[in-house]
Amino acid sequence: METSPLHTILLFKHWAFDSWGKFRLLKVLDGLSVTLRSSSSVTYVGELIHLRYLSLTCEPIRKPLRLVSESLYQLHNLQILIVRILSTAESQFYSLDNEYLNQWYMKFEIWRMPQLRHVILLDGFLPEPSAESSPSMEDLHTLSRIKDLKCSKRLLELIPNLKKLGIIYSYKRTYETGWSEYGLDDLVHLHRLEKLSLYAEPYPKLKDDLSQNIAFPLTLNKLNLSGCRFPWEDMGMIGVLPNLQVLKLKRRACYGTEWETTEGEFCQLKVLLVDSTDLLQWITESSHFPRLERLTLYECNNLREIPYCFGDHPMLELIEVDIRNSTMVESAECIKEEQQSYGNELLQVRSLKSRSWPS
Image (cartoon, rainbow, N blue to C red):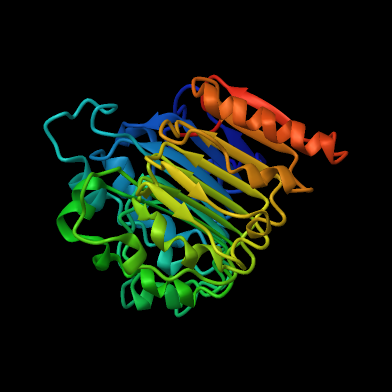
């Protein structure tokens, strides 16, 4: 079989090959926009030993996914892996448990691939590291969109240089077990982590608070919380992070009616987004967010005004508020006028009709 000189293949409609044997020189294979279904359309992806970039979309119970997952460790040059597993609704297997299927068929042996740099599993599960795992994956910088990840000591020891971590927690799991099952208090040992994103289905009442079961690395400069129901009264443990520049609190990330900040908190924060909250009163002073440049408040329906002290913030460039909250819009305009009285013509106020960020 003649070997093709192609180094890159981008798939947009369907898998057009019965075998990858003649494409052994491939370095980039992008199949994220099509679905890998029939076992006759793919052989072990492990044949493509020169791959550096691989992206796939698979159905959870199909044989090709099993073939892919069992052969990944043979890709000794792979640096970027992106895998999307279709939900049961998308794949038309309504009677099967999606979580079970993903855990059973996504036995990706990434822990035997020390050359990996970026791994994104779109709502997929990862197995626990096995005895055959690499002693360390020092090049792994991104681990994103992982479902219900348990941050065991063994796992964290494998990824000492991780810079970006994103985890999605299902409401069923967090409601049944509580946050204590996930080892998030050990995240503090990721000494190079810069961005952390934790997503959870908002639930009225959990067994415990996230704030009691997590420790944030001091190296964080970006933190995204969504649906985690972090108590406003415990926000001080986030406020003292010395390098935090971006904080996004979405979909009831926090709960409670009052948020009071104290001196010395959020000293480096530049971007603050609060989306969907029961917050009624925000007590703060101008010195508590000394470097804030952008403030976004959306669906904060109980909050009637922005603390007037933001009129004294010389670095504030943009305030975004929900157009449906007329008193908030008015409050933002008053702050803009206050800034203008000090000679700051840079501050802009924007009224939002909808979210301009992923929910």
